[in-house]
Length: 359
Image 1 (cartoon, helix red, strand yellow):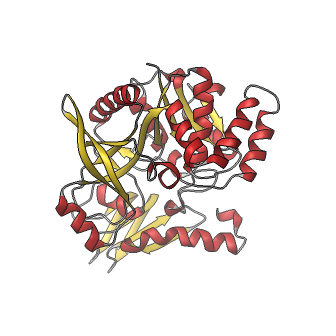
Image 2 (cartoon, helix red, strand yellow; image 1 turned 90 degrees about the vertical axis):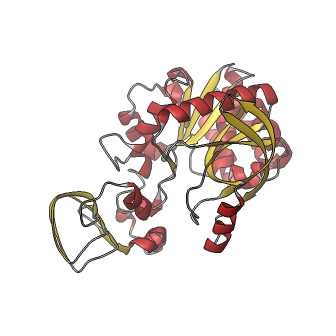
């Protein structure tokens, strides 16, 4: 069994504006320490997958900065999309190239901008998922044991147990659920058979391509056209042509919610999808006033529970509570923590206003 890892690294992470920009996206930011998100992702899959079989799917704007952060990678480690079309085309494009190299290859697909704190657990469950995907020909996803009624995550409901692998149980997936309201999330948590959807998938390249052929025939036709030109001078031109014709759709909507052979392995690996500044605050170390972030010094009066990014500066707070303050030199974000998901709407406003220098 030959394992390949596919790191999806083409997004911008608009909820992390103003730090995250088109050419300096979320996955290349060092949000917690000296390591960037994509370096963390690469390092935890390294050891499970040979570096020559790690693929980074990104776009021309981001390739250079990713290559600078992961200088050990070669040209063949990169799969370039001309522009984003969501996760189904991204995964399909990787699958045809991996299948060309090895018809029996198993793919581990993971976002490049998620946080996993228990790397040993991650590597262990990935190995078991890969073996099961290889033996069963199924589509495997990792489900995270929920520890609170989160409304910012999708959920997976388990069905019957189909196997035990050492300390891990494998269940048939009963249903996928989109981000719920609080009342529904509480109900999911109380039921005991729902998990957070990690967005991490394991399957054979041949399996996912068969599912795309069945569920997304237009995309499959486009992938076949691209496949004819793999390794030729016309390859990039054909990819761009196909990408202009296909519709963008996520692998969850396009395949996972429709397929029959979908399985979930529950795990506790310290996973977080890092979906907003509020989430960063929640998992960051805090001072005695419950302020978190990056700054030189802080002086406060009647203030606390804030996330502040203002490196190298003294920050003075008076009567400031539960805010996100992010200073990047050319832009300052000030938001209530509870509304930090809406930062993406600021980015949309900037686009509509033609303020591209801030994107």
